[in-house]
Length: 130
Image (cartoon, rainbow, N blue to C red; front, side, top):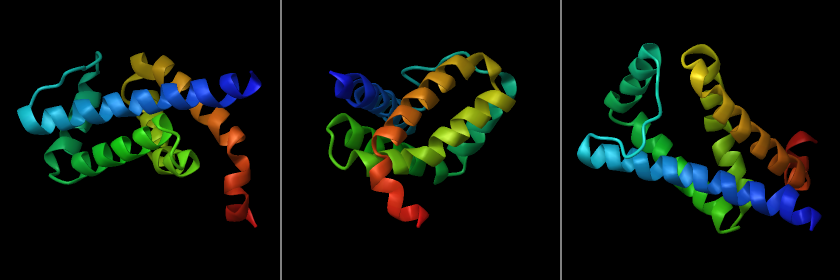
């Protein structure tokens, strides 16, 4: 039962979050419109537009979101999936701290889920710190 609450539920929730983000990002690439777009500040929209208009950053980030999200969702190398998503999660948190504070609650939930998984998979990362 402990494993379900410390690992399975956070893994599936974080996987779904990043899968939805990837689908929305690829939808934007294909159509120029978002499926889901939460309220974003003017500076946040400018940052997002810069990523999208770069020509390569947006597709790369959404590909990593997809790979990491599917890895977590289907429990295939989830520690690797979490490692892929960690830098993106850091950018999301700082984005909301600096540019779009209204999205901070979701970023904090995402961080909490990530930290639970980091603790659960800590043995997989031990060799990185020797």
